[in-house]
Structure formats: structure tokens, C-alpha cells
Amino acid sequence: MHVQRKGVLLAATVLMIGLGPIGWGVAAAQDRVTLMMRSGEKLSGRFDGVANDRFYLDISDTDERHIPMGDIAVIDFTQGANNLPETELSQARGGSHVLVTKSGDLAKGQLDRIEGARIGEATVRFRADGGERSVAMRDVARIYLGNYPGAAPSSPAPSQSQQNPSNSGGGFGGGSGGGNVTVPANQQWVDSGLTVRQGQALSIRASGEVTLSADSNDKATPNGSLNGRHAVNAPLPQTLAGALIGRIGNGQPFGIGAGPANINAPGSGRLYLGVNDDGMGDNNGQFQVSINTSGNNTNDNRRNPSNQDNQDQGNRGRRRRP
Image (cartoon, rainbow, N blue to C red; front, side):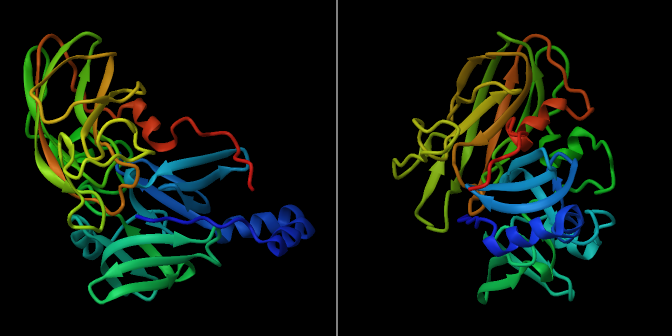
């Protein structure tokens, strides 16, 4: 997915200086948006644009998050991602993105890009069956980014199976065992449901094929791009684009591939799986991953605090605007 972010217009900057705190508060209210993460957590703040496949969200004047688009389930401009109607959710649980306007119009397709850094001036470009649509962001109620979790959106602490319903079938438990995980290509990291200890032996196999862009020939298996290409801004830029990769908690990513990959866990914490790409929004397909473990491991149903790493990659300082 191509994204573009525009700087604040000089005229708007002068206006904000003239209005002072009152003007800032009005603008912040007008630009307020709520993100529902795939983990179930909600983040609310002021929309500040999209760039490099990251959604910029000002939680406060000193706390700006740069959130990977693949980690977002819903962008809600109207009702704080509360009481989302089932008529929308039933459409959003599939792989297509869903655009809902304030007038009630619903379109299924693919979010192409967001242009602009303020709700009043931004434009949403959305590809549907009838071609590309251009919708003023001020007229948008919600955007669902595909594969919406089945969990009730009001749940403050969803169980692991709710966070990733397709990953509950393997039944990770204490001691030796294993399980199966579905890894969608349009999501940067997926919580496997498995917590490991450093040095624990893991045997991982993967299958499936994904598409890495709107080009139907841009395909990859768990071993990587069938065209041999790389993605320079991917978590592992030296590894083929589209390859299956992993990460323990907040640790460094590592390659996995189709396997069988016999890995000693490089750290202790939650195991995340992902597709090695730098723009997840236009990806399609999924990998099926089987994990066999030995030794003690943990699968508790409390939301893992390390999920926060997925949301801001440590970027909580105020970003200097160009």
C-alpha cells in the first residue's frame, strides 16, 4: 500500500499560533481518531498523517505513536470503536478492507493510500470493484483493514483466541507440545500464543503462498520472494521479501523459512511470527505454520504487555515536523 504524508500548511500553522491553546484544542477535537489494534487495545488521539506504512497518532503533545498499518484492525473517526455494528463486522472479518462513510455507504476493496495530515484536508484513496474511489476523510466513519478479529470490540482484555482466533487450534500448553498458527500476509507481526524461554528448542514448518503487492506475479512462499527480490525497509532487509520470520518479545527478528527450521529460542518471551515485507497493506494470502516445542512453555490468556512493541516500536518521543 502506497502512503503519503503532507506537512502542515503554513497558513494553518499561522492560524494555530494566533488562536493559541483554544485553537489547538478545537483542531485536536476535529482531528480526533480512535484505532482498534489487532490485539484488542484502543488508542485515541489526533490524526497526524500516514507515512512509510505507519499511522501517526498524537496521544498528547509529547507522545506521538508511529503505528504499523498492519497492526491496526479499525480506524474509527466517529464513535471511538465502540458498539461497532454487526452489519459492518460481518463484512470486515474477511480479507477485504471495508470503507464506511458517515452517510452509511459501505464499500469493500483495498485501502490504497491516505493523503494529507489533517482530517479536514485529507483524502482516502480506496480501490473497489468499480475502480478507485477518492473520499474526503471528513466524510469517513470507519475503515476496517481486513481480517477483523471476532472478539467483541468493547472487551478490555481479550483472550488469546480472540486476539487471533485462527491460532487457537494448536492448543499450546505446558511441557512438550505444539500448535498451528495462521500468519496473514497483511499483518506485520502475529502473536503465536506461545511464550518460550531462552534456549528452548523449537521446530517450525510453514507452507502457503502470499502476494506481496497489487502485482499478481509478486508472490512468495515461506522461503521468500519467487522473483528473488528484497524489501529494503523490511525487518530483515537482507532476507528475501515475503519470507517467514520470527521475533521473541521485543528482540531482534530472525529468519525461519519453510523449514523444518530447528531453532533454539534466542530469548525469553512471546513468540511472534510475520512476513518479511515493508508495506503490508496491499498483501494477500497467508502462511500456515506448525510449531513443535520441547521443555516448559506458557500459554496464558492474559494480554501480553510486550504487544506494545507492535504499536509504537519505541517511538513515543515528539517527532519534529519538517
